[in-house]
Length: 269
Image (cartoon, one colour):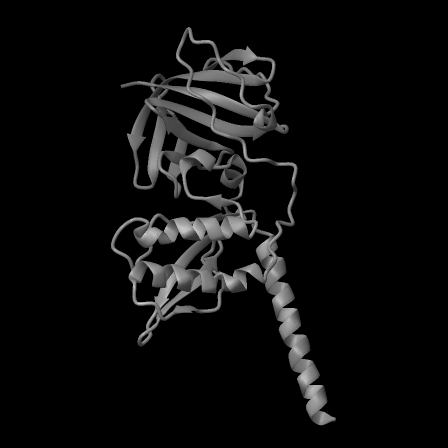
């Protein structure tokens, strides 16, 4: 009878631990996949990074690995993101890989079972080991538990003067608000659903963590931004939203009263 009670307690503990891990995973909306892993010599060597993306998406995760799918809600709350990494475990005559997921504070949220392979071909061995590591990911039955009413808005198209704007696809078209900002802004509504305004006369000064956008007239720092994991995308310090660069143009995008506001920043050479 004593053994039975101990066994029951152990099973209850394991089930509770699994449920807690699954609940924690479900509170994260996105997962990032790096372009290369530290134990490999080049980007996407053996197509291991591409396979990681595929396996995450197969298990219902939303993967971020490029500027094109950078969501604005992540700029408001960077802790919606899980950071993934694959580490190589030393082994004799076996290839061993393990998946690690960490949060915005670098706390380990999930560690997969070690995936193994006895194949001698490097590419086949790494890919088989990675697939085996993802078996424990599949057992999580990941399903984001947050709000489903905040879809990922795409970055706005850059429109030359005199060029007619093409409306974005309906599923992603945000309802935007027309605003004016005294002296510094001029509202230029392009349609009933979009507002763009231009900030004039900004000087860009590089800093240790990013850039300062300084008003050329008052010499006041209008925006101080720091770099993110995505190229040419910056988080604004002490203000909402992000600033990003498309071609030679800079834009600020943020939410206000459940509306998306897009500003074109006019920078000086």
